[in-house]
Length: 559
Ligand SMILES: Nc1ncnc2c1ncn2[C@@H]1O[C@H](COP(=O)(O)OP(=O)(O)OP(=O)(O)O)[C@@H](O)[C@H]1O
Image 1 (cartoon, helix red, strand yellow):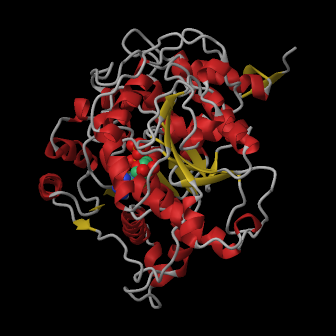
Image 2 (cartoon, rainbow, N blue to C red; image 1 turned 180 degrees about the horizontal axis):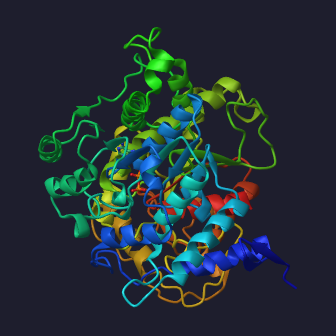
C-alpha cells in the first residue's frame, strides 16, 4: 500500500514511489525527435519566456549571478571547476549540467552535491503542477530539456544560491538556457565538429551558434580555437562591443605541479577557463576586491582557487574504478584469489574527445603500473616495470550512438593509444542499457531481457574494429535476435589469452580479437568471472564512446 504524503497542497505518494511517478512524468516529455531532425518546437526562446512567466521566475533569474558556458567539449568539466573554486571561496553554488549518468538529480547540483530526493520532488511537483494548470492550446507542456532547464531555475532561485553555473544543452543561440538575458560572465570551451546536423558542418557555423550566448556588456572568455572558429567568436564579440579574452591552458609550472581534480591534459584548458570565469565573476559581483585587493599577485592563483581545482569531482570523465584490484594510492595487498579488474571510464564521443580520452588512458595505465610496482604488491614482486606492464591486458568496452561515425572515432582512439605504446588485447561491443525513451531513477531495476534485441549496430562497430586491425574488411556474422543462452553468446574466458581458442569469435593471433556481447550486465559479469577464474589475470578496461554507456557501467558497478 502506498503512503500518502502532502506536498505543497498536492496529494502525492510516498517519496520513493513519488520519485518513480516523477520519472514517469518526466519521461512523458521526451519528444519523438530523432537526433538530426529539426527541433519539435519553433520559437523556443519565446516559449521559455512564457513558461518562466507562468512559474513567476522571470524577474528572479536576473538575480542568479550566472556563469553561462557553451562549447563542444569540456562544458561540464569547466562548470564543475567553477563550482569547486567558488565553493572554496565561500559561496553557495547551483550547477545545471547535462546529460546525467545514473539519476536525473545529477543535473542539479547544490553546494557541490546532487540535489536531495526530497528537495527534487518538492520543486519538481511545484513546477509540474503550475505548468500543467496553465497549458493551453497555444502552449502545451514543454519538451524534456526545456522542462529541466526551467526546473533548474526554479531550484536555484528557491535555494537562493550565490552563484549559478549553467551549461548549454546544445549549441547556444537557440538553446533553452539562452533565455538568460543578463549572465554575469560567459565562456566558450573547446570547439570541434559535433551535432553538425543541427549546428552546421563547418567550424564557423558551429562557433556562430556557441557565440550566440554572448550578451551586450557581459564579458566573455574562451580558450584557443582553430582560426575558422575564433574569427567568428571575435566578430560576434566585436558586434556586441564586449571584451573577449582568450585564456591559455595551464602549464604545470603555473599551477605549481598541482594535480587537478579532473584528470587528462585536456583538463588544463577547462581549468584555466574556469579560473578566468571565476575571477571575472568575483570582480563583477564586487567580491574580488574585498577578498584579494592587497595580497594577490597576478602570477599566483589564490589558495582557494588552487584547492578548488584540486578537489573538483565529476563522474564519468576520466574516472578510474578499482572493481577488483587495490587502489595503488592505498597500499592494500592484492587478493590472491582474484585477478585485477580496473575500469577506466570516459564518456568521449567526438573525434577530439576520443583523442583526449586515449591520451589520458595511455598515461593512466602506465601510471597505474608504476604505482603498483612502487607499492611492491605481493603478486608482482621481482618484476621489472616492463615485465609488470606486460602482464596487463587492455580491453576496450565500446558503444556509441548510431549517428556517430565509428570509422573516425575508433581509429582516432586506437592510433592515439598506439602512439604512446598502448595496445588493446581485445575489444568488446555492447548495447547501452539506458533507453532514450525513458528517464530512469538511479535505483531502477536493470533489465536483463535479451529478447528481440537488435545488435546490428554493435556488429557494425565490430566490423569497423576488425577493419582497422586487419587493414581490410572481414566477415563478422550479423545476428539480429540472439538465443537467450548466455553460454552460447559469451566468449569463453580463454578468449582473453593470445593462443587460446576464440570460441567462435573472430580471432587472429596477430590482431586483437573482438566480440559482440548482447547485454552490458552480461559483459561486466563476464569480466568479473574471468578475473575470479584466473587469479593471475590483470585487466584494464577502457569504457568509452558514450556517456550513457559509462553511466550504465557505473550503475552496474555500484550494485
Ligand atoms: N577540452 C577538451 N578537449 C577535448 N576533449 C575534452 C575536453 N574536455 C572534455 N573532453 C572530453 O569530453 C568528455 C565529456 O566532458 P565534459 O562533460 O566536460 O564535456 P561536455 O562538453 O559537457 O560534453 P557533452 O556535450 O558530451 O556533455 C570527456 O569525458 C572528455 O573525453
